[in-house]
Length: 210
Image 1 (cartoon, rainbow, N blue to C red):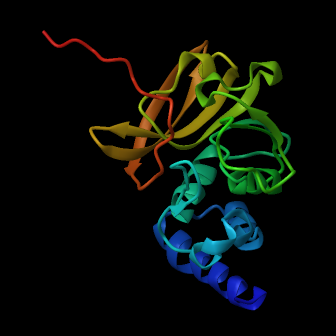
Image 2 (tube, one colour):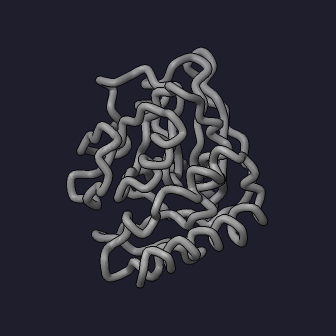
């Protein structure tokens, strides 16, 4: 498949998946129209780079569908110079987009997670739920997938007023959520049901029902 083919597929992704589904931030549109998503998937799956579903990677992980990435970026309202804590960096596609939007990115990925294919972000290998406290405080927490809960350890690494975008798993449904941290407390609002990859290591503790 040629670069021209990929360029056409990228343009089609923007027009048919993003613009028609509430991704209307022009900076996000421009970044996703420019960054070659095909460079962030395994070679044998490059033809799948622009489908409207998650792309399998390795060790049970997957790259979020383009729409999920676009909505997270839109709701994150990334500003030039933002310090971003990216959780679940996968192959680095979201890191590349965040960098294109002017952010300084610290990308956290598991020791046995996918290999990052972009050198723009500072990479921390370890438990996703532990974050990267040495780089705190961050202006934006960008969880690139859905989790059962946002751990307190990540909230503690955020500046007061920091923004948070993530997916939440609720009764088997993944939902796009955004919010802020005020005086150390995270408030999240559910925005839409949205297909997102589920990240490992974020199981909520079992709650007793009487």
